[in-house]
Image (cartoon, rainbow, N blue to C red; front, side, top):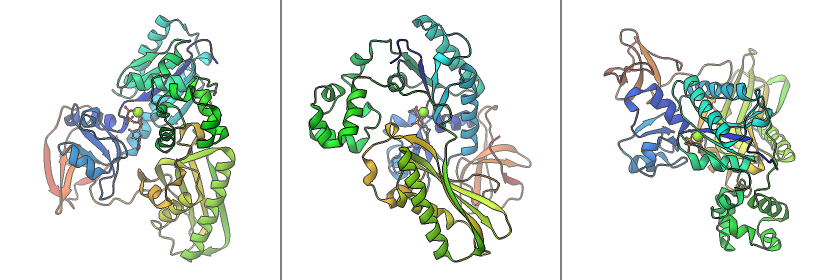
Length: 439
Ligand code: TTP
Ligand code: MG
């Protein structure tokens, strides 16, 4: 355990929604919900203005519409989120080379390895945190982050949660236990809803309850290994190091064929076999993947990848297989396939996931997809005018899709750097109107 509070955790506030409010001035200060807009879509995130109405991540979008009909419902713009993420990670890497991104909007930083000497006194840390928040705001053109600093990853992350939104907190060495004891057991990494429910059944609700529970009783419910991990964390014993290259880690399996394959049946069988191998390697490494990717090389040697990000990371062969198969259905492989592969990325370890939530069906998991996104050298096929998308009109300039239907598209003409702008409606096939990449 560290003697000084030198583990920093940063998490952007209402990340996707904040990017939308930044780029769409008319939505600032208003409820904004980003997610799947279709029949079975789920909420990826909601702005704090929408959270007041009880809208939460992973809630079905129709439920969110019921709770907060006045919100702007927007499709995700992953290009813009990736850019913002890179800007934040660059700021963090200027502070210390030891940065471990956990997702697009969240990272640990080891301040012991900082590029310049850090003053670990409370006033010294406060100064560092305030400067960091300012740098993030400047680099991202206005996004706010919350920051926690403590003696371990676990406590630093708890500190960030306490500070949300747009705040910071420092947990002084020696104060970890008093902080944790009254908290719900779900605060412990690895304890997701399923595990929490199991613990509730034996009367464990708070971290203090874990501390006073006999090891054997705990082990009966969640197994010996997990019981020990749980007890260690309940006593704030966490010496996990910051691992800077976790983000880039991925696991993949691919096959090249002697002759081009056309049969869907054969391709499906290969995907399932690859998925089993990927899952086995994940399980061997104790890792879970957030993103499943397929790689397809066609008869003309063009190579494309398709990926889907899941709400819950997985190490299950059936989940990976069913996602891979559904990704392949979106690829025109009628001319034959030369190479096929399955990959898993966005890896996290056991402690960042619900240890026992693995009994959900593959189908449910696949339905949970946040977004399908082409990931490499191929272009998305433009189809329709999803609300929130960036567009440009030859005469009116840049804006975003405010709504569409019945052969018409309504655009609000405003950008990050303009005041709230006017709306205008066009025919959906107006040749002067174009989809554009996030500026
Ligand atoms: P979070 O950091 O969990 O959430 P947040 O940044 O939206 O809000 P908070 O202020 O509480 O940190 O997730 C970061 C982004 O990841 C979020 O903006 C959208 C995406 N996401 C999903 O797509 N699905 C999910 O279920 C969750 C939790 C997040
Ligand atoms: Mg966040």
